[in-house]
Structure formats: structure tokens, C-alpha cells
Image (cartoon, rainbow, N blue to C red; front, side, top):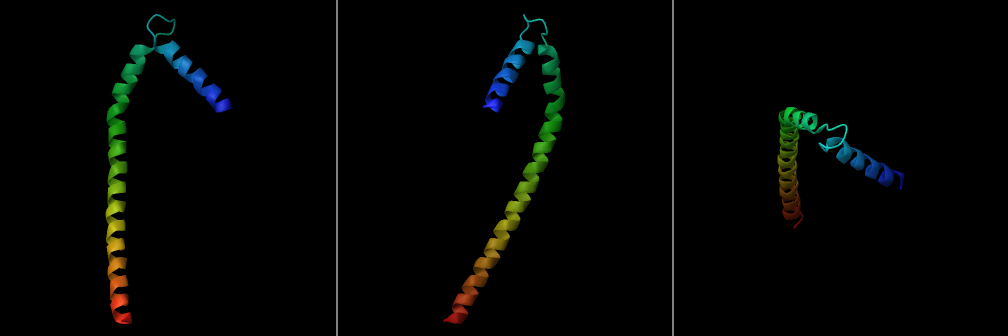
Length: 78
């Protein structure tokens, strides 16, 4: 319940601070921040995607190896 109320308060503050007619009118600064952090964020997400892709390839390779071992064990048991 506290997190819901806090979320509503933070969203209201965000709207209040970004509107041009309000006293803070931080809209320009927010846009500049987003422009500045976009390349860094894109690089970070790209690295995470590379790590996830490499782990996926490794997992598929291990699953294939285990499947081959299971088939070999099944044939030798017959």
C-alpha cells in the first residue's frame, strides 16, 4: 500500500516538474538528460544482450551434448 501511494506521488511530481506552465518546468533538462543517457543505455543493453546470447548458445550446446549422451546410454542398454 505504501509503495502504491509513493508511486502515485512520484508520478504526480514528475508531471508537475515537467509541465512548462508549472514553476519548475524542468522539461528541457529532462530531454537533455535523456539525449545524453541514450547512447550509454544502448551500449549497456547491448552488452547484456551479448551475454544473454552467449549463455543461450552455451546452454543449447550443453543440452545437445546431454541428449546425445542419453541416446548413447539408451542404445548401450538395449
